[in-house]
Picture (cartoon, rainbow, N blue to C red):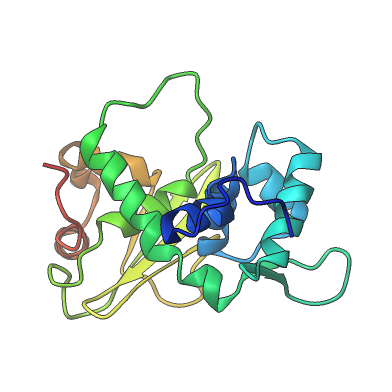
Length: 205
């Protein structure tokens, strides 16, 4: 177990000791989408050094936040129940940033489309979502992912959805903000599904 920085008997300080180190929450962000192997995490975290990633993974394992899914050297890391319980914290931080600092994107910064799956979930509101389940497949030459939602749940993943989809969106998730310019290529039924899908998300203002 790593040395604690704050040495305070305060719940906020103790939580910061556990998840406040550089890159820690970003590791958790990736594992909220799916379990990942060391190499996949390194790809998901451009700019992070290999030694630092190894250190962070050991610390998170020791703290019971992540776990290797089997004993093989190349086994993927997944979140424990304690790690999964951090999801509302991560989503609240994402939502706070999207609402409070909407223009913070820098043109030279890295961006992985998979991160948008978490950003969408941060804006998902089950009270606004349709009763019926809607599955949207995102298709782009550089990336594939999917989202399935209704009033009860929001699920997402990378790659192709294993089942029937209601709509294939031939672009990245970020292009949903330009929806008025994109709907012309959809059928009437697809347009209806897309509108229902979009009602599930809180507006940023």
